[in-house]
Amino acid sequence: REREAQSGRRGGERYGRSASVEMERAQTLVVGAGVVGLAMAAALARRGRDVLVVEKAHAICTGVSSRSSEVLHAGLYYPPGSRKARLCVRGNQLLYVYCASRGVGYARTGKLLVATSEAQLSSSLPALQQRAEANCVQGLRVLSRADARAIEPAIECVGALLSPSSGIVDSHGLALALLGDAEAHGATLALGTEVIGADPWPGGSGEEARGTRIRMRLLRRGQAGELTSSSPLGGNSPEVGVDEEKDSTFVVEAAEVVNCAGLSAVRLGQALGPRPHRSNLTLTETSACAAHTATFAKGSYFALAGGVHAPFSRLVYPLPSQDLAGLGVHATLDLGGRIRFGPDAEWLGERGVPLVHPDDDPHAFDVDARRAESFYAAIRTYWPGLPDGCLVPDYAGIRPKLSRPGEAAADFEFLRETGGRRVWHLLGIESPGLTSCLALAEEVADAVVAASDAS
Image (cartoon, rainbow, N blue to C red; front, side, top):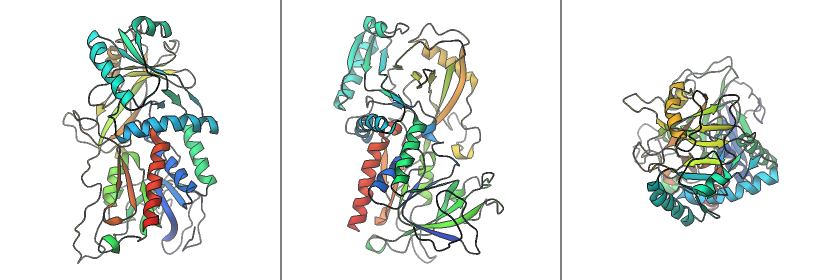
């Protein structure tokens, strides 16, 4: 990787300071070091790209992928032909092989989807089975109440669907393995590094813009550094919110950019959209992300208090609601056998409360202990033996959505920036993003390389 200022060092170390803003050059810039971003970096590096991954946190995998159920989904829920369905089924197969080959912890636990009424047994459960089979999910079995209780004695239901290919994975172990693969193929990771803007696009569009390198302005924060701007991507000055004692700005010039920013992907995409490079130019294009509005569904989890033993050895899920804001309050296990329940679905900004972007809200991931009341009711539909007073707040996650309350869940979006520019945005990568990460990275990496070869 070439440098136009030689006072700094590579590989996530602090960049040196100089009289002018430093310049880095990379073939491919990946924004975000969650599981999807790291899978993307590894896939691109294996294809011979010179990859720089930037992550605004001071550690990898601290966002969406670190606050999930860590479930390997089979592909049961999603509309046949959708990206979610196709990439989840393919990703499930790839991840089991990958985890076994890299020593990443996982367990093929299986999942029971329970019908708790005759109406669900006669309608909802067969419909789910039909959808799953249309998605090519293998090995599904319909169980009677007696069959279900034979393998999970604590469960209560009138029937169930067994999905043997569902399981769990150590998401942090997976992230470390993906980072190792990326670095083994020459990728570089810069932590504590946030995209704060981009130089305006060159004038014109189409052939005039194709092949143009993109200059991204970044802020590297010291461990104690903080941004004072509530929306750094919205400002025009790269110096907004910079602590001169701890932070430094620099520029990365890249041939292509892949936006894997999770909760911030829509906001980043809109901020990086086409803009005129001189004041007398008229902007006729809009960002590929302009039509999308980011929405967020928060999900809280509760665990069992000490002394209460896990009632199940498999994942146990209710049948899903129509809008798939979440999959219902389900029982999941971790690799240590600890059980937790959740997530519920709380749309941020609902009931007249103004939406604060999760990145700007220090309390976004707090768990409200009062939500336990609804958890007791939901869990007891399939585990009536849940003791009173045994649920304790555990953690919360936030799902980046592209749909609104009451709407059908949106599919994953994979958009290329307008005007032939080699900038790609991955939007709405919620569940099953963890399961789909390798398949998604394959597909996007192939598209990035093909676009480069064609330019």
